[in-house]
Amino acid sequence: MAGGELGWTVDSRGTARIVAALGRIDERTSAAFGEGLAAEVAAAADDGKALVVIDLAGIEYMSSRGLRGLTLAQRRATERNVTVVLARPGETMREILAISRYDMVFKIHETIEAALAT
Amino acid sequence: MLIRFWGTRGSLPVSLKAAAIRDKVIGALLAADGRRFADAVEAGAFVDGEIPFSTAQTYGGATSCVEIEAGPDAFIICDMGSGLREFGLDSMRRCAAGHPRVYHFFLSHLHWDHIMGFPFFVPAFVPGAKIVIHAGHADAEQALRRQQEEISFPVPFDYLRAEFEFRTLEPGTTYQIGAVAVSLIEQHHSHSSFGFRFAGPDGKTAVYSTDSEHKIDDMEGETDVVAFFADADLIVCDTMYSLADSVSMKEDWGHSSNIVVIDLCHEAAAKRLALFHHEPTYSDADIARMHSESIRYEELTRSGTPLEVLCAYDGLVVEI
Image (cartoon, each protein chain N blue to C red):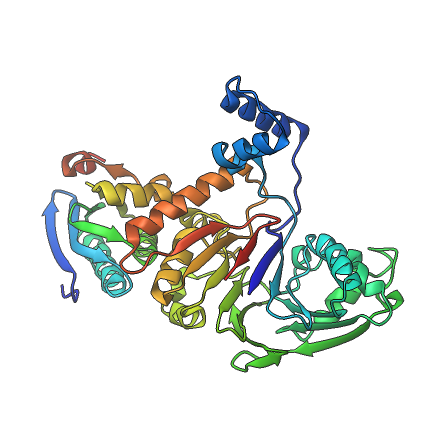
């Protein structure tokens, strides 16, 4: 999907859809990020997938708008019986998730494989 | 321009218990590690330089009251939380030294923690004092009178001897209060709240924005907030909850988070941020942790000029 300055990849494995954004999620890209997540959650649900894994490895940094986009995606996913988990945060993302306490509201996995085992 | 913080807590005043002070003394003694001090000055230098603020001092427990000193002609005060009592006593001292007995209040909103100090505001009892209460709420007078009805307080509003004027302000209009230009913005909060922007004659600008929720389903609306914050020398902003709390169990509680506010300040190119309206259940250590995390978040996410992140406490004075 188009994301402006945001790269985006999607993969399917078993009952999971793995989505990865690349770049910085800030005030310029957060809207596209949020829309992309919403679309992927909907696609996963339509496809009978029970899990969406958001691969954070390519995300340099995420602002509060990006983080809140994760929450909106999680809400949409819950409505459609889909679970959203996060995977492979880099050091900066790991700190941001801790400071925002988002590590208390999302399961975070070190690897994609661990996320798929959810 | 000087900004004096007389009350920095949200929701409810709090005070330190004996056990908390005991813990602080223990912390200080351990930090001293047997050192001896020649006198109070030397001991004070050690306390100020080598013991964390959260151990040696306290962020305080009075609710919202912030003074903007931008000229000699009148006092300008944001909100009437319990911190107003101490401001009132201090202002009496300053009036005795010649300061005009003119007070301009700007009320963010009418919830109890932001008006509870007014019945204890001594200048209101002084004949000849002039008190102007500016609010975006047309029912500000009703709220102040109601909290002094006999069922709630023994001294009725009509007993007060100062000269009162209530002014309802409109967002989008700039008002001149002496040499200070004041504008306001409506914010998301129960029964609404308003943020105020003060532009002094020296070109310095301070913004007071408390009890403002930045809604997860209205992130595009934050461009208005960024514009209101633009290039400010100091933003005093509600940072009561973690971002996770503000979008989950505390959604719709009407408050913001440090993460969101730092992002807004970065976008607005503000120079300094004072974290404000501290959660009443937070200890001094909790507030200090929130402050250090906020500083770190600002470092991680900065793309231009650094934003200085302060943590407001009762008694803090910031010069801009």
